[in-house]
Image (cartoon, rainbow, N blue to C red):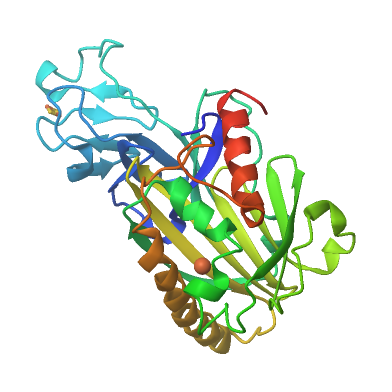
Length: 324
Ligand code: FES
Ligand SMILES: [Fe+2]
């Protein structure tokens, strides 16, 4: 995992008031809950006393009580009470578990995976989608590392093969470019696939001047993606890393052409039927890829059309090396 990044990890709706939720994210078992003031807490889900799972306990007054012997934890992971020692006995500092900084924004829960500081950077969600849109979504678990799941959404070569009867209709197998541009840690890639009449050669990225007229998609490092269908319609995916072998994909349909409350809910829900169908076409193939995690240097023979994937792998390595 790349350190010092905000990761989208869950849909905010999964976290109910006065309830603990136990999840595995970024390879750790975590317990999350909302404080009475609405803030979200996230600490490791393993009691420092004798290892019981805190998510099986109770939330009481902004703290979590372990179900085994009642040790109470605050949102920073510190034990604030050991009932068997009596209320008047101070709790030594070593009674604590690790905690993560988490925030709820744009309908997702975000986790800061890295060095804690009072001034964390802004959550890098797509500015254009921050207001004015309504959305509906769903999630599903894929038994692959999140690099595989992300790279599938950067793959512009697979469309006419995997999505023959949906978004890849028309047998446009020849891939021009694609053109890849970076701004900070956000990649925009421009796609223009065409039918191969036997006389064409794919254009090289630098031969394409009018790339801005092409269809484009974006990847914000480390784990959010946007398909820019039109100014009013977008599809967003959050690839939440569960562990080295699993990813939960949160897929959302965003639109702003229908404003009527009931109607927009129906449209958003209906669109996700199509999105799920397309995602399952991908899943069918991606789950067969070996290995289930990717690296910049690995045993694959990439082609020009894979440029967004190559760029993604390079950027991962840069960020892992500490590049901001
Ligand atoms: S194991 Fe949690 S209080 Fe003992
Ligand atoms: Fe696909």
